[in-house]
Length: 537
Image (cartoon, rainbow, N blue to C red):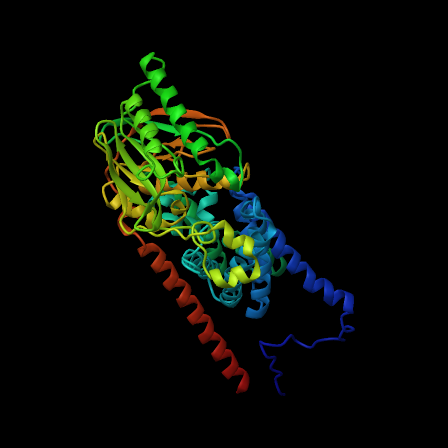
């Protein structure tokens, strides 16, 4: 008697074979995964602010993992691209509020390419044992790439930035945004594997213990880790307290032409500061130790325009406290987006120049090429801003205040080095007037909440047109303004000097996860070679 051997790479040919699948059936088999990938990306978008549906990220990644598992890298590339579009197109729609759909679509289409590469990698590692671990590490590696390329990177849409209200938030203090995002994605892919193992066990009436254990750990460990990290989240005043005032002067009207109203914007912030000073004198508001103005609160250079210097100096003297003023300054023929430390007795005494400037907003990459396509785009950025080189830490009435101007809040390094530089409090002066009432301001506010927990610091967010806020070190919003209103916030806040593990470790957790992703791809490639050799024999 001879035994029949069936290859593991081919289905057993037992019984009569069915008729070839119809064209419609083949089309359905292709379209369903594509639709699921795009819809799961849209579900991930819904988990982001201003909504507080952070938990939707888990089923989003579970569904995405289901579409990728066991597929070829080419299929993963296409499905990953659809997932990226489903996520990024609605998330970044604010980028086209005033300039039309062209830049918005271009940005989303380019960023989705990097998500597509992650999809290809996840498809490859999905055949490995404990695949959710390798897949989640690949997602983190993809985010690391998006934070660096092209044009200095665009970290908007990091999974961590959608988790300000979630149970995983304490993990930001453990390893920053990479660890927080990794935990969420691991749990989502783990849910996918848990459901698959459960269905397989029901069908075969047998449980594969290794797969079941890996699926269970993928879900339980991130949640348990977040619970264990809760003691790292504290708003205890280690270095006493300070009373801070956040000024939101508002702009005459939203849109790109707010810059044409530069003197009006400056006057609005002067007026709101003087109004606060009057309330302090009347005993209706507490005297602040220092005052924070937003980015672009004085787009008129006070160093070359005496009238701008005089009105700022008048407001600072009126409130009787040092003020951090956001200005646009021309020095040696170069433009700088600058924060100016203005003392009520000495005038301007220190400056911080924004280091991570925004491509296509504050400088124009590929200027000649873009000008050949559309002259209007080059006219929006007539002169590129120059970058600063040193971290910004002002000493305001004895308090060390770290500065991360607007766009910089999205970059891990730009916030961290203010804390390692001694900051006891972080300020994120911003200007969102260009983006009208879009979701952008809420997405950026959520970033600042994550940074508060990541570094265990109070974070203030002074914005020209809202939403301005004061955020406690535990990520809670103590006060906030409305949008497009003139307002001020006065709050006593805790000052802290201890460093979280995330602050001390810096990029190390991200580097470890990138290496883990590389190990998963290497294992997958080795396994594929072995399968081909076995097939040849």
